[in-house]
Length: 522
Image 1 (tube, rainbow, N blue to C red):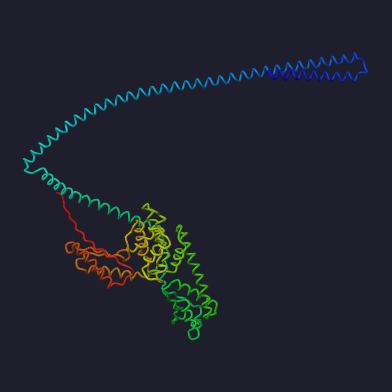
Image 2 (image 1 turned 30 degrees about the vertical axis):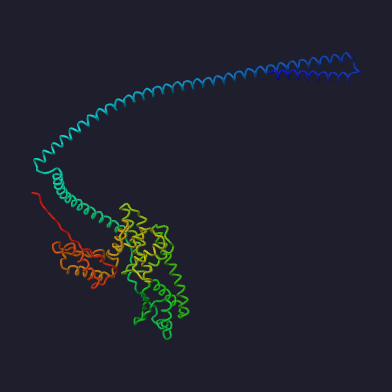
């Protein structure tokens, strides 16, 4: 505040000095005029300057007074807010102190209750020990009386009682086990039939006819001579380059392509088709068109494999396995197209897995790849499950898929329910009517032969060929055949099947010996 007053005084002094200087200048300028007039004007200027200085001083004083009042109000407001905070903190502190005092009283009361409870427990424990001692004494006396009356020691009586209880429990348990087993079997069979029927109803697949040979129709019978060529050079070159035998018989309308490798047979068919369309049949042209047909067939197989993977919604399949799947497009088994077969097995397995709450995608993957070995089984030694396991292992397929490939013909133990579903779906796809229609008569003869062989064995009561002839179940007379002879019967029957029956793959022989005990309560 003193600083502002000082500023006002300095401002007034400055104004006065300015007025003085101005008056002096005016006086100097008007030196020629009247000295009185100049003095009068100078006095007036000085008076106005003094009044202006006084006014500025008063305004400065008023402003300083306003600022002083505002500062006082601000300080008072801050003090009031601080006081309110202190009062609130003091109130919370009192409340916390009261809560702590209440908690302390509660803990003291609880502690007193625990002390009283501990005293009661000590008293009860002493009373219980006394009662236990008295009860043990009475128990010993009772045992001694029972030993005298029965003539048996306590250990002997215990053994006899346990033996009686064990015999009775085993009898009751046998009845319960039989009831549970019968009920479980009944429910399992019903549920299995339901799932199988549902899977079959949801799927319909197309199958091709037998394709061990390819019949090629000829539009003009006269081209047979050109196909054979001079001294047979064209037909020899064709068979050497394609690896497929070309049979030209007496039928003027067709020629036959014969070969075990279905892919090469398809390449040969396309090559012959292009040769006849082109008209230029020569060894050089045969070699050129065979190379083109090979590339076209490889592209077709790759596309077929990719479309199959996409159709089934399976991801992460190695490109080499995709190519092998495409090769199944030209592979048949008992007149059944293998690519359509594995697709059907994949769908069936996925449907059954969904009904059972299993991994549907993994089930489809296992079903699709279960016959992957058939894509190259004509190129290497071994069964198609073994070859399939080798391929799946090489390209990093999951263990469940590998086990499904290895076990779908009962070549090894299963590790997952999905493997069981794959085997069941494979049997459904191969055995249902229409799937392998050209081998139906052979199949019926083989089944009848299997059952006939089994029924001719001594001690056999009934026999059933199931799973498309892949398993023979034999029920023997339990009085004529014991457990040891049942194993011997299975071995002898398997040897007779190997020597007397022509069949593909393997046949599982299961001998069943059952003893039933039936009693009636009257």
